[in-house]
Length: 174
Length: 174
DNA sequence: CCTACCGATCGGTAGG
DNA sequence: CCTACCGATCGGTAGG
Image (cartoon, rainbow over all chains, first blue to last red; front, side):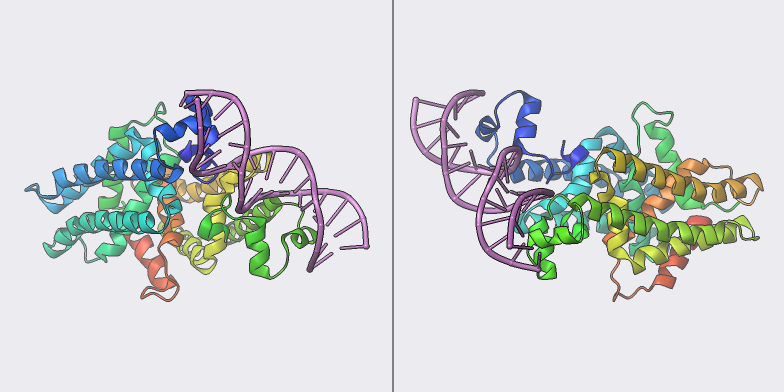
């Protein structure tokens, strides 16, 4: 529901109604509405980090490693659309302390992703582009997938991963 | 304010306070909160369409045309960050009729953008990729620029446009 | 897990 | 452009 209608526009009564209980009863399970948002963000962040950590220290060329990181990232977005959308777009409604916490987590993820790009630039496998700008650009494209991806559509997870890693590495020009 | 804190989390009293009048007085200028959102979306949509229309019928190779479209799109996002953010991300809070209207407008923009890609594929200038998926991917990356772009940062509009058109056309691999 | 309720705030209107 | 206010709804609590 946070994904569909946005955190601010989702009321505790909306949530309670979905579960089939009264709004007040929700407080036997959670402390606050924000705790719910925080937990979703943290759990989904973990998914992304686990996947990236499995990839980043593998002994393989940077291009293959980056392709793998892209494919793993996409796999999480497409298999956990709700969580990904909340982690990527609703986190900003967290209050100060938690907001800062999530901001730091997101930055760390981008930096670890960026290190793969940097490795490839340093070793001469990649062009001499700006690794930070490149990483932000790629993650922007990947993070918006949740908005248009249809689980039952004509594209599956693998095809999507292949499309992105191919296009981002090889470019559009023939 | 709609960009910074989100449409749903921005109250008429927030808006009135920013302008220095009472909330009730706002209704001498607008009919409703949603009308405000709708106007921002429509005005910004116009900016994007005007720019794309100036590019799409130019007589030049598809790669140059696409690069130009990307650069013009970025120019609008970076010069009208607030409007772009609202048009791209807050539009979904519109009510049914206006929601559908904006959805159609956004689709039309993507389709016109996509036609440039299709031309390049047909003429053999571009690789044989999926033009729709490619267009969505590119626009996703471009539409997220507002989230991290700093007008006073070390990157200006031109450099950003060049980065994206270069990377998307040529790819990362050396 | 419920009923009953709190003070605060919401978008918006009446009337001047 | 204001004061004064509407009914509805908000996140959350008390007490069982």
